[in-house]
Length: 638
Ligand code: MIC
Ligand code: SF4
Image 1 (cartoon, rainbow, N blue to C red):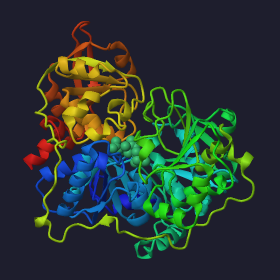
Image 2 (cartoon, helix red, strand yellow):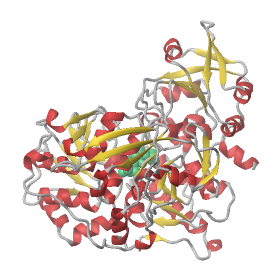
Image 3 (spheres, protein in one colour):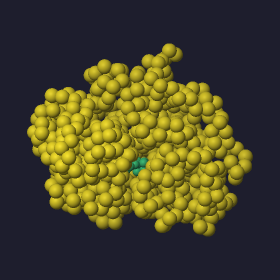
Image 4 (cartoon, rainbow, N blue to C red):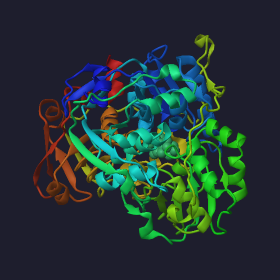
């Protein structure tokens, strides 16, 4: 068996491990972050279970950190008190980004982790199976239920040789994205192998598994080896280490080879993580903003590399450089060893340890300005500025470009070796991780006025006549469907309020049109719903009356979220997509009956009279959920 198969088989609860079949696995650990967490805990609470049933559950606060009003602060109180009551560890705001802290303090080889954030596979860098999912799936896992998924294909990515100077783990994953694109990982687990992995430290591996989310992959995994052991030991967690390697005769469904010594610095150009070019191809482009941070590149090592480059230099007069350390541990260490001072002397703006600019919580770039970021996503407008020009690159490329004021190949500026060895002991202090209450019955969950009850939907209609309210192109992201940013994120606990922003950046009239027509249908292209795990991208449309999404294909997490909230995902071939116009009125005469008894649903365009078929491809279990009007109705039934 390969590593992925070993992890799955040791947690298999039901199903056959044949790719394409639905399987269920038991979940050892869960994580949530605040932007998805409030909903996840409201859902968990609604299940009426006194204590989480996982080995470990952690609630992080890292997204909604700007406190421009009471909303975010209220959510933090809610999260802290509900964690105390139900047996969940609570990582306070300021302790760091969920993925970074989880890797440092909790990730464990051989275990499974389900997180309500798409970059949860960051933790798979230590040889655990970490998967991103919607909040409701995470709530179910906390309630002791298994996680259902389609058995993925396992792709072996063989890394050969060693990266040359100026080439980092970020360039490796950008090379994989260049090869496989943002939909190349859908339905797959990417397993890294080859002699090239032995030189990669755990934080470097995490940069690679983190951005597997941008491939659409279910997870990305490294084996657990000597590097893993060294990292866990340095985190004073040597006892958590177990070896996990593929068998010598392990089989894989696909194979990709990357020759590390042939790689050069790469950069993703606006506005998709797979628009990858060689830095050399666009060097000289003037840069106005550089941001170093986000869960993919904010480790101690990343910050140290940036500090080493910036030491004795100044940030270019036209550039604003922002640094957001991934964790309090990393921030403390660069503070104590003086690297923070080097960054500040160079002219960096130091932000708190959180997602920050990555999710549009501040640092929106100026109009037309090129922003170079070490982040993982550059979807249009995600930075907070319309028509933004966001590029994704390594901390090396970011740091040298901050000095020169233009996109610069790090190999042109870096002299000498940049080799950084990880410390033998990280600065360990878990005092901002609050353990659950010893007397949970004494804890009162504090709820601010912005926390509104969950909307629920009725059962699937037996027949339906509705309009296509929006027809979109390919690769629509969840940022397009349900944008984030400083203005909208504080409404994550208030579905009626946040629903006013559904598709607001794609079509500002969407909300009012959906309201006036009492809901309807969305018609999407390929890879509909890629990106984030935010279930608000299903919940808010459900609240607006969206019943069906027809698309050429779906991203995994979003499809699950649609099902969980009772919206029927249907796939249609390109010619059907082409022939249906926005505003078309579609009639589904036997909707519920067909969902129940067939794999196809028939419908017609009322105006043209053309008859069509769409596939739902739902498992028995998923049909029940959709027919009941969503998972919460099913759980209540149980
Ligand atoms: C993101 O990177 O888009 C987020 C914000 O972390 C999301 C979660 C969310 O929308 O709350 C994710 O990746 O799942
Ligand atoms: Fe936070 Fe950005 Fe990572 Fe999402 S991708 S968890 S917003 S740092």
